[in-house]
Length: 630
Image 1 (spheres, rainbow, N blue to C red):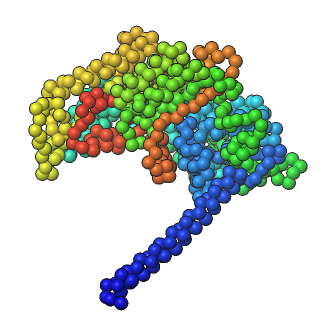
Image 2 (image 1 turned 45 degrees about the vertical axis):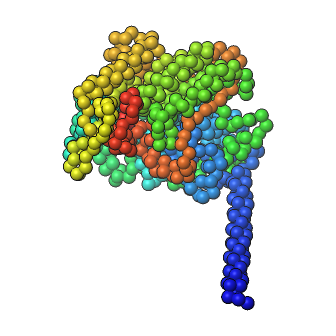
Image 3 (image 1 turned 90 degrees about the vertical axis):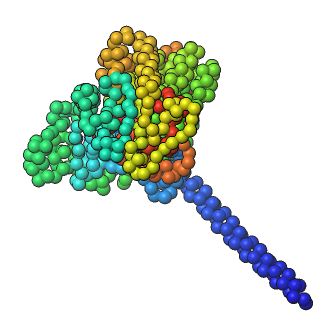
């Protein structure tokens, strides 16, 4: 054998060895992948047949436990299959949905095997006041129709979930807990001194003396006009919240809020035991650990049995209720029948109004254009309900969507608006031409105003040793954050803002059938509560989504029955798991898509991704409400 033949033979041997190693590796990988996939499918299958509560049959007496976790929202963010993944991993679900809770109460009321409902709020992170009132309204209906009780339990009650708890038949608090009633606050973070320190010069263009969205860039504290507006909102909202708790608990609403001195004196009398203090004030009925609470429920409802089982609300509606004949969709609690020839379409619009967003939810014309055209042309769709939760945003997208909603009305389809926790600025612009508008008592709306901000960091950059230059045949029209604005460009920008504001006023005047002088008086960028908005005729009635659906059917003259079809906002889908986990921590105080964080303003106006601002001047004009409610 020659030297080269030896080399060839050795090379073939090495290649064969590598091929065998690769084959073995691939075989092992395929085996483990297949095994993992099969196990995954089996776990999913078993999870679909059971949940963390006891396995209970439909024919057994039972107590249904409604235990929402994370954030309660009416805008569906996860589907059932995604929720099962959380359950498999033993993780707390980051969201709970009003439709599931409302459906549970609806079916449990007519279910003779359901003896009572437990509302366990121990894992609840946040619920807005409107959603609390909506579910509370369903609890009242459940109690009246079924003559059954809703027993509320929690380790701790904050002001939001206590409003919901107050609708219960009775309230039990864990011995280590307390009820925190703190009142309301509207706050803003101010950046003027920060911007001055770093020599950032924001060019601000606005219309409306109450347009507080730009104040953080102009001032170091709240203006008198903004404080006047905020004080009115707090007074109106607190009156709605406290009076409802007072009615539910049969206590004097005026005694709910106590100053620090009264609180200290009251706490001293019970040796600073928060649970006993809450009980003494009449805020809770009993104090028990969870184990003793369950024993108490068992003794009340077990009858002749040794023990009455408890079933989780998701298990109840997805496994027990959905298996009964004749029930096609357990979440369809709004339809009066499954008549596909008479449809009321509900469209959810949640998030910032913009065509360019990195948020989970956003409202852009491009995402709704086809949906709206299809609804306009579909003879089966008789009316449309728009469910808003938005701080506003881009005037351009807001105007385009408004025109699309007007097109629906031109096709003879009533358009009814249901406002959630926040429907302000561009959100109100889109609502104004609706056939009818509902707001919740605690909705923040109005903010009829327009602004634009163009920052310049030329002096900041100079201090750090870098400059900017360019060659162009029309320098005034290439605005950059690295340059100062010319007087002409500033005048053009202010003119554009003035024009947008004038059209906003005209849109409200025409849509709400209000004289222009009245609109000018209540506009000015001022934010109103839902209750005040009704008195000002900015909305027609105080109500919730179910009221809006009934009104839409009535306006469409649907004489018999109708089906409700729901469409949700378009969403970014980069990574559902990382998205869900980040939202679970980001929504601790208030949902990001409802109240934008102040830091988002810095990101939007002061730290753009490039030194060149949008070419379209109108893309730099906003109608936005940056109110933070604590």
